[in-house]
Length: 101
Picture 1 (cartoon, one colour):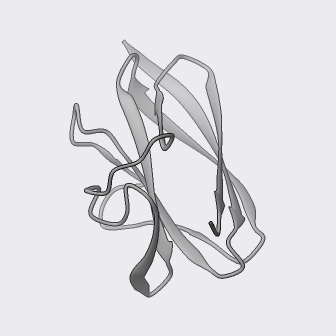
Picture 2 (cartoon, helix red, strand yellow):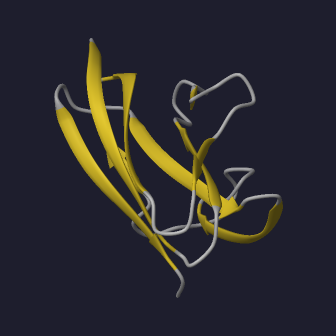
């Protein structure tokens, strides 16, 4: 079943970043179409997505214009991460805080 979920993206890195959400199960990326969610230094943004209930949604983030500094699964969704994924749920809410280590 399709679900509407809200992600709250919180940029605590000290620089502008790009963020993308993805599902390995379906191959879907949000916002999709080679676009990203851009967050300025200190910005907090809510983004809504439609996903399949039960699929794992992971975030990848990187310094805007420079994919050398990465968080989560990174820009190519190939980095290991312990806590950068969540399960899609109807009316689910997930806060993603991206901070310098």
